[in-house]
Image (cartoon, rainbow, N blue to C red; front, side, top):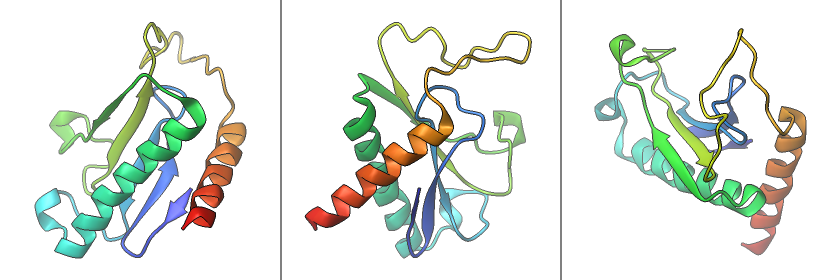
Length: 127
């Protein structure tokens, strides 16, 4: 979706909810303490930017933002730090729900990707 000098924002291929994004540092680190100051600043700036993009296009009523650090915490990629940004709505019963390995998403990933790209382009023009 967006690439910075030290970090990037991607769509989660297995989203918990519509609009689930990840902020990931370019460098492979397993903990926040291993990020250099410039990387850490951009990481949190990207987090805020991802939240702003999602607010622009999806108008969520809230967000879950977090990380799973270490295998015991459920980290799917324990050696590569990443932050989840998950938009939420009151009554969004689909959040992290899966039945028979199937989940109904009300928006396709391609459609969401186009909306995110358009919102990013619009924000760049304002600068």
